[in-house]
Image 1 (cartoon, one colour):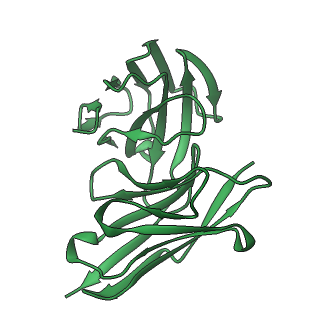
Image 2 (cartoon, rainbow over the protein chains, first blue to last red):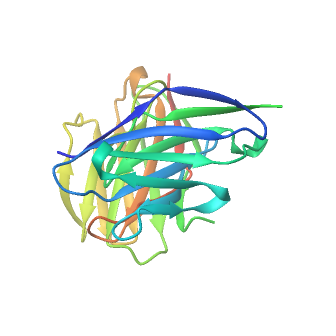
Length: 107
Length: 112
């Protein structure tokens, strides 16, 4: 069965700093991979997805992720954090979600 | 507007009550899901409906009973719940296959 592991349940960055949220997947075949964001008391919203083709995927709100098969990773990055980025982020394969990483942004 | 609407947004119920959660999607999807999100726990997939047939039931207690009358509507009927069932219940929909899911805003359930 496919699964994902998110490293770090909580990440804290300063406003304007690089955001890096880590995700590794477990799959015998190249998976479909997703990143979602959840704001308090809201549902999950798709940030970006990898299916096939280009390994660097750009999403909404300035986020991007790179699929690295050799490392079985799909880390999420954003060059400059904004206060509005504070939320919970989930890495996922179809129907299965990681435990989530809470991102805090410090002014 | 996400295209997936859940009602009610908040629900407080006693352990002997019967209530239902409703989910409606306007995206033309043919698969719908119920997830449970508890504090400090991963998102738990409860039920999967594909083309209105239940295709997955992840060992969910019988006090949770899903219903999918058509491809646009999904219900979760609740009865004799326990306090540990308090959580955010999320509905999602997607096209069949390895596609992304679209989520509703959730129902915050508190069992007292």
